[in-house]
Amino acid sequence: MPDGFVQSLFCKGGFFMQKLIITAAITGAATVPSLTPYLPITPEEIANSAIEAAQSGAAIVHIHARRPDDGFPSSDPALFKEIVQRIREKSNVIICITTGGSTLMTIEERTAVIPILRPEMCSFNLGSINFALHKSLPAIQAFKYEWEKAYLEKSKDFIFKNTFQDFEHLCRIVKETKTRPELEIYDVGHLYNLDHLVCEKLISPPFHLQFVMGVLGGIRGNPEDLTFLHTKATVLFGKENFTWSVIGVGASEINLSTMAIHMGGHVRVGLEDNIYIKKGVLAKSNAELVKKIVDLANMLNRDIATSDDARSILSIRKEL
Ligand code: KMH
Ligand code: ZN
Picture 1 (cartoon, helix red, strand yellow):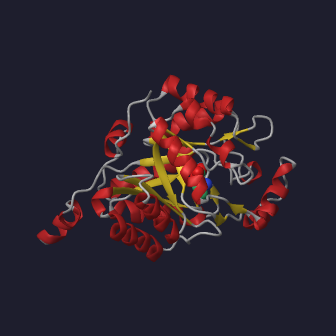
Picture 2 (cartoon, protein in one colour):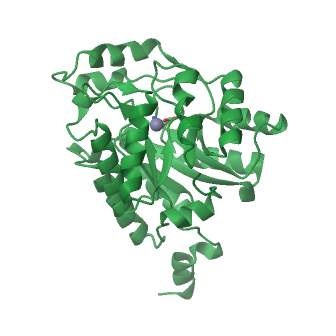
Picture 3 (tube, rainbow, N blue to C red):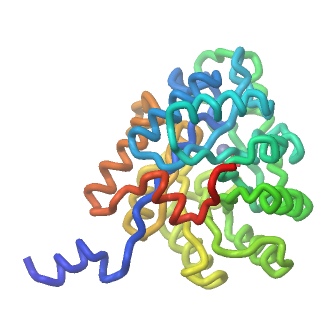
């Protein structure tokens, strides 16, 4: 084998690669319970699934809450509190709480839990987009709960609202609570929104960007779209000023993850974003999806970050 080949395989062409941070998005709000029997619903199920994902290699768990009796997305801080307490009893994993909530919540409802629980991380959605879920409808033969059909149908006429006023609200919260924002970028304009917030001195680097690809209404999950977002972020902010991760919503999850592992980015997988472990086969758990990423990372010679590694890579403050 020629020397150069070994060099590029093991040294990644001579540049240093951070350990890979895997985030597991445990339940979300876009996946409805009828799509998969493996979706965690109650606080106990969500917490157990998060703990299992962490044991399998996830450094971060991204958390939404659902009404325990019918799985409807909830912003009730008491549910989040129970989930967080249950996770904390057994795991040191970084907890990233959603502020995206669900399509039907106001920004106040979506963010109420952050000053109460002061998590290490929270999501921060950087732009308004169409967020259509109706393409899931044909996959469902029988609905488990009454709300699900209308929830998916109505998303056709729904705008996921994240205005500049909302950004200011969230900037205040993350500043006050010192919560590390995970900046959700669904399209290229969202990078320019972030740039505007930097110019207004509302937020400052280093940033942790999450490229959310494959939502119907946002950028697609094509390889050139990922390299484009990454290049654009590098031009705008400078490569030393941000870390990044990718979410491939739906079928692109594993393919985009593989690209990110190779490119030096980080990865989010989980039943919030994708319910299949491979074509036509449902993932039985979040842990199963995380393990697939660990296997891929091993094949590509990328080490996996522990939660403490991730705390240091992402400059997360100590838990309060
Ligand atoms: N559901 C994902 C496509 C959030 O929770 O703030 C994006 C997300 C947003 O996870
Ligand atoms: Zn989410």
